[in-house]
Amino acid sequence: MSLLTIKGLTAAYGEAKVLFDIDMSVAAGQIVSCVGRNGAGKTTLLKNIAGFLTPTSGSVVADGRSLLGMMPYDIAKFGIKYIPQDKKVFQDLTVRENLELGSYATKDYDWEQTLSYFPKLKVLMERKAGYLSGGERQMLMIGRAILGSPKLLLIDEPTEGLAPGIVTQLREVFKELSRKTALVIVEQNLPLVCAISDKVYAIRDGRIVAELVDAISVDMCEGYL
Image (cartoon, rainbow, N blue to C red; front, top):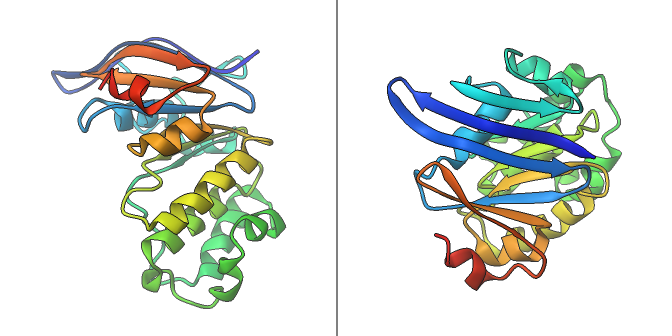
């Protein structure tokens, strides 16, 4: 059964249309990646799912419930978490305080899972988040998002600007996370996409031009970009 189903989604910024008749689906436990050049509409797609933007037409249904018209915080409470590309954290708060805010919102104060995925956060607990590296901020953002055991994570460009070692760690974390939650990932790193994805949607100029499954290769993805 599909966890997330999108049909005929069209989106625009004012008069400028950005997405055209998007159809896609995500099953429980799947890792689904969206690939495409900058400006293809990938981030806009995630923001429409998360409730930060409102489609001009189409439907977005999760677990049998329409997400259209819901506020972003209600969508998050429903179990769909959005992790933006900008790696923004509460810079004047410590790592511990950032996690506490996530716990307050979800009523989940068990950090065991987060720290098992990102043990480095244990030694950074009292450091202000503004002094973290890009990789450490990404760990914190993902760790905070998985509090409350969400059913779906929407992750925008998680490996952008990160060192290869961190990318390798995230690859393994995503595989582990998919045992408990589905993931929709917007990503430019095609080797990573091919290594972890159950399905890949190639997006060009706001349209899905291919849906790839089974033995997904970098050459297959590049052929649609």
